[in-house]
Length: 296
Image (cartoon, rainbow, N blue to C red):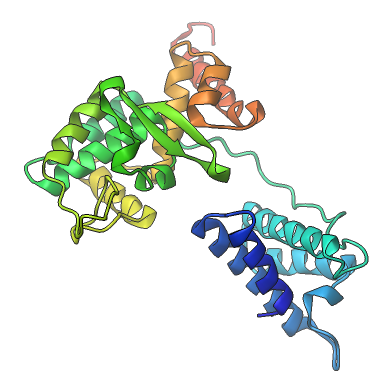
């Protein structure tokens, strides 16, 4: 790995205090960029990132698209490059920022995938709760949907983050921003039952949701568990844990919640991020109209 990339990752880790997930993403993106530079350099050419100019970066964008990466993935990898070259420019390692004018590929507008209210209820009620792992899963998915949390936020919850009397949890979201999120009485009920049989591997393990070995659950494991429970419930859907967050927001708006409140509940920094859900509710209203109105 080039020294400039190591320095940038150290900067993110120490000065920006980025999460391990963020660091892995940047490392993966920049390692792929290094691979491109090595594969496409001319004989005797310089493969170091500092040698790349704007034309080379445009070639990299095309190289990514040519390998079948989705437009959203290409955009994320280019965003990592922009951050990297801004850092290089501030440190005087490049005279100009070659990524400043780099454009993202056009992305198709995709509305978030959702589960209907009845599907969410069916999913949650189908989770077997006779053993401790089942009660853990019921508590975890009730919390995901009840609070509209990201899966990373749910697996990051510690015992100290709970305020069950007030039905609140302290959540550490993107950019290490903290918020207090209501999770509802059903989630609180199942969390209490789960905690009664929670068995950490060691006394120092403070995570609420543990795997069968007593260690903190990973986001990947939560996704796998959701697939199992969807299949058990007979729900044919490509839903992910994030689908429960999308469903949470849409169901609130369907029932009259204002957009600003939903923004706060989701922990979005910008209202424009939340506005995607207004398009979802409009789509659903149009579907209802087409099905029910005699003159549609």
